Image 1 (tube, rainbow, N blue to C red):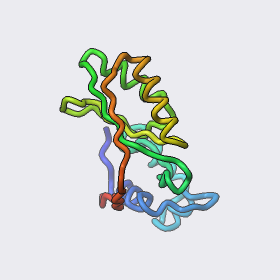
Image 2 (cartoon, one colour):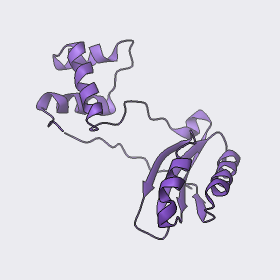
Image 3 (cartoon, rainbow, N blue to C red):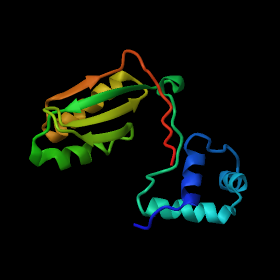
Image 4 (cartoon, one colour):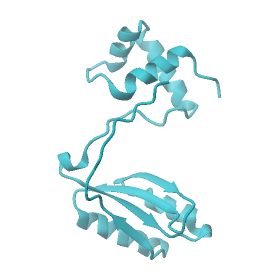
Length: 151
């Protein structure tokens, strides 16, 4: 993987929290940083190809859009982890899915229009995978912080 240079870092620092909402956001980024629009696009494509970034997209507050979110944890046998993760990842409302070193070893977040829909989907996941130990841990209070990594 080629290393990032200072220009790559400047682009990533700029877009983390202040991605321009315009018809040509990459041109706005380029203008702010003294680059060409094409250079910004090519650099971001390379960073994505090299798996330095996964995606560029918005983060939304589910509740403000009429959705609910929850954190789920599952106790999955070692030989079923890949199958379980692939089935969980098929659901559009799953935003994160991680393996952890604990008794409940798969943790994922789920967003949907209602808690009822999440519960129905958790039941479907259980039926498809045979995993019965899935717990639903909806937040009782959200403490949001701004995650910005100075590169």
